[in-house]
Every structure is written in C-alpha cells, then in structure tokens.
Image (cartoon, rainbow, N blue to C red):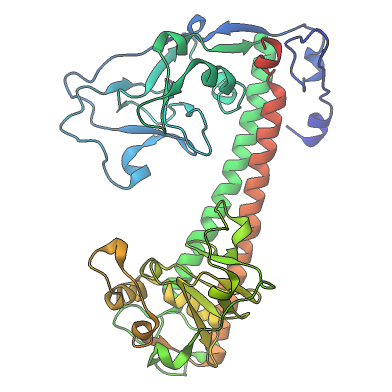
Amino acid sequence: MSSKNMTSMSGKRNKENRSLVPRLRFPEFQSIGEWKVEPLRKFAVRSTEKNTNGEHTRVLTNSAEYGVVDQRDYFEKDIANQGNLEGYYIVEKGDYVYNPRVSMTAPVGPISKNNVGTGVMSPLYTVFRFANSDNNFFAHYFKSTHWHHYMRKSSSTGARHDRMSIANDVFMGLPVPVTAPKEQEKITDFLSSLNELIAAEVQRLDALKVHKQGLIQQLFPQKGETVPYLRFPEFRKAGAWAKVAAGKFFLNRTERGNSALPIYSVTMTDGLVPRASLDRRIDDLAKSSANKAVRKGDIAYNMMRMWQGALGVAPEDCMVSPAYIVLEPQGVNPYFFYFLLKLPQTLQVLTAHSRGLTEDRLRLYYDDFAKVMLLCPSLPEQERIADCLTSIDKLLTIQGQKVERLKAHKMGLMQQLFPVLDEVHA
C-alpha cells in the first residue's frame, strides 16, 4: 500500500453516540455503517486435543516478540521434558494460542497465530481454532491493544504474579470487532504488506549483523594464532601481533565523580549508555562523590559481568557506579580493545582470571585484569580495524532505528484501523 493511498484514508468517529467506527477507515467503506461486536466463541472453538500417544515431539512456544516459534530455536535448547509430552495440547498450523504469561511487551499475555506447523504446547496455554481458515484479520487484531481492557477486567494474576488467570468460558467470550468481509480483507492486506516491509528491513539488519561477525572473525587472530586471516593492505607485511599484559595498555582510573557529570551504565549490547535512557532506578547509585569519574575514551567495565563482555567506551566525560572498573588507555585505541575484549576467545581468558566460587559471583578486579595477556597490533592498525567496525555499528544503529520506526508506525495504524471497544461499551 503506497503512502498516497494511506493519506487517502480519513478518520471518522462519532463521540456523542460512541459508535463503533475506527478512527481511520479506507474511503470506500466510510458509508457502510458501524462495525459489530461478537464474542470470540462465535467464530472459534477451543482446541483441547492432547498428545496422548506422544506422536508429536515438536514443542512450540508463544513468545511476546516473535509469536509462535519452535521452542528449540527460541531457547536454543529443549525446555520441556521430551518424555512427558502426553499432556500437551496438539497445535495445528493456523491455530491461535494465548500465553497467559505477562511481560513488558505483552501486559496481558500474547495471542498469536501458529504459522510454524503442527506441534505441541504446554496445557497452560489456551489454543483455539477459527472455523474459517482465512482468518489473518484476527491475527492482526490481536497485535493491537484493543482487547486488553476485557482481559484486565475479566481476569486476575494467578498464583504467580507474572501470569493472568482467566476461565476458559470467559476467555472465549472475549469481544472482537467485525465488519464487512471486504473491509476486513482490505485491512488484512494492508497490514500484511507492512509486515512484509518490516520483515525485509529486519533481514537487512540481520545481514549486517552477520557481515560484522564475519569481519570480526577475520580481522582478529583466531585462538592459538598471532596473525589475522584478513588484513588491510598496508599492514600485510607488518608481522605477528604482539602479546602484552593488559596493564601495559590501561591504567586503573580511580578518580571520584562529581554532580556535574552525567550518570552512565554498561549494557551487554550497547556498551556505555546514559543511565536515564534505561528502565532502571537511578537512586540505587551511590552519591556522586562515591561514584567513579570516566573520561571520554575510557573503557568502563562491570567487574561482575566482564566475563560476559559487559564493557563500553565512554562517548563523553561521565560517572559510573563504584562497582565498575574504569580503564584509562595508554597510547592505544579504546574502540579496538572494545571489540577485542568481547571476542569469545578473550572472554574465556577473562573468565579464567575472574574470582568467585560460582559463575554468578565471578568478579574481575583490575589487578587480575592487568595480568591478562592480549594480542595487539600497532596503533595505526588498531585504528583501521576500529574505524571499520564502528562504521558498521553506525549502519546497524541506523537500520535498527528504521525497523523500530516501521514497527511503531504499524502499531499506530493498527490502533486506529480497529475500533476501540471499551470506548463503546464503557
């Protein structure tokens, strides 16, 4: 659907009569009247067939972000006990699944259509099937938030605070809006085309990530080697990388923070970012005088998570928690070492130098970090590698933002293409 056709849609809403009309409607349907509200049970029935004979071993899950997926692909391992699947529901392709587990992205639990194939799902889920197999209209509707009001009103949190509890009959009474088949088809086609566009941009994002990982593997020496497979032309005759203790490259900055500096935190994926940009409490930090100052270009790492690669380069002068170690570069490129320290082979060495009885208690103190032997080329080669990889990171950021804008655009359209039921039945 082109942007020209999108702008030709006009909103129509009768606030005084609280009529069931969406805010946005395609021009050809503006005169066909209001939508209707029907209970879900009018169009669908629960599917409660159990995997009694254990013939199905493919376990599916319904995630808030990705919908129905193969459990092994999602968790990278089997979560369910493969020998005890007889009590699981059989889910056919085209069935819908409600997962009562709530999250930030699914505050009442997600409802998703199974486009994967036949499998089994936990009996904690609600599985239902439409009489009409051409039901993608509802797949889009359940990605809106318009049905959340009914779920909150009709259910409660279960024994676990992260799950909704709703009776089966009450769930099947969930009111859903319907309109003429032609209008449903138009909305479905429009939103499906947006999904295809988003999927294409996600593929581009994934391709960039794969490209970056491939470059990293080739621009740094593999375990047991001292020369990378791929080298920029001007450094191909430079010889092997030198093996030097990390303490020669970085000093331990212990300067105290001050209230004029912004507060930053280390993230696993984005490095050092402003604390205010994260969904965390800020008042759990120490007073400014107890925090650590970080200067632009320093590397800060969380000593309790360094074995997982929790580090970042400071983009400006800032301060961090006293639980962090701040590394002051000594004539080296910090961005090169940011990539070097996150390599799997480097993390293995960092883990070996960390102290703690269990994995979740490991800490990498500066004195131990300083003893770690690191492979390093000349400064010009460091800078060349760092520039290459940071330029790809910038492309990844731009592409990621593009994907998020498209997703937000789609959500905004869905909220307006479907009428708001609780406004009419409040």
